[in-house]
Image (cartoon, rainbow, N blue to C red):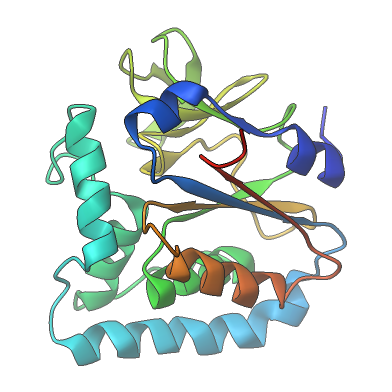
Length: 232
C-alpha cells in the first residue's frame, strides 16, 4: 500500500543510534505529488549537461571535503570506499568517465545531476511503491533487500549494524546511500515522489540546503522537513 505525501514526510525518523555515532548528520526530506516528468525533461537535460561540465572542468573526480566525510563514515561501519562508494562519489566518478552518466529517466536524471552539482547524496523514492514512512536505522541483518544480480531479481540482506533506510516491507537503501532497492525506485511513470538528502557537512550543511532549494523549486507544492541532532 502506498503512503500519503504528508504521512511519509511527518512519519519518517532517524534512529538515535545514528546520531550517537554521527552527530553531525542532517537529513532533508522532500515530497511531492502530481509530478509530471515530461515537464521536467528539458531542465533534467540541461542539468545533466551542467553536471558533466562541472566535473570535467575540475579535471578529476577527486573527492571533495563532504565526500571525504562520507568515506570516513563508511569506514566507521566497516566499508572501504573502494568496496562501496557513497552515491554522490559514484556519480561524480561516472560523470568524469569517458561514457559519462547513464540516462535513466527525467526524474532520476534530475536528482542525480543536482546531487553532483551540490556534492551531496540524494535518493529518490516512488511513494506509490513505498510502504510506511522512511526510517534510517542500523540493520539487524534480517531485513529483506530486493535487488538484482546479473539481471535476475534476488533478495539480499545487509550486514548487522549497517546504516540502512527501511520501510514496512524491508530495506529501501543499503549502506546509507550506496544502493537503492529495485522495489521503490523511480520509474518513467512515477508521479508521487520522495527525496532523501543526506548530509554530514556540518555545521551549515550548505550543499544539502542548496540542493533541497533547487529540487523543491522544480516540484509542484513540495513538502519539506529537516531532521538533525538538534531535534531533541
